[in-house]
Image 1 (cartoon, rainbow, N blue to C red):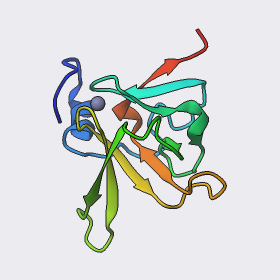
Image 2: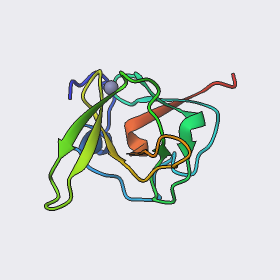
Image 3: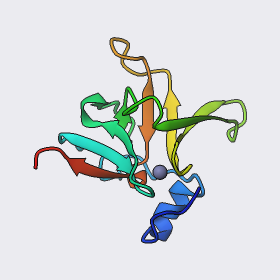
Image 4: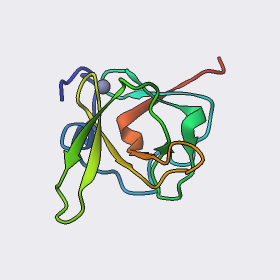
Length: 127
Ligand SMILES: [Zn+2]
């Protein structure tokens, strides 16, 4: 990860840089459904739009689509033996965001972008 935001806390760095995972149901955006855009905590790149967020019941903010096709980098993650996953990173700064799974809403994309709240900032579009 290219560190851009000098104000990142140790807790944020553990997720963004060291690929940690926040505890489920603890993140500030898990049960948060305001209208706006979610941006990278490190570099401010737009990542997800609120109208693609859904309640997956998994304990982390979930989206069925990225803000645009260039926002996210996808990387094979074999860190858990026997359970290959696809890691998602900010395409601009390489910050770790979470993972994408293929159990999202079938009437949309079928994808579930499972993202750590701590990896993102929210910008409201109401003001
Ligand atoms: Zn970024």
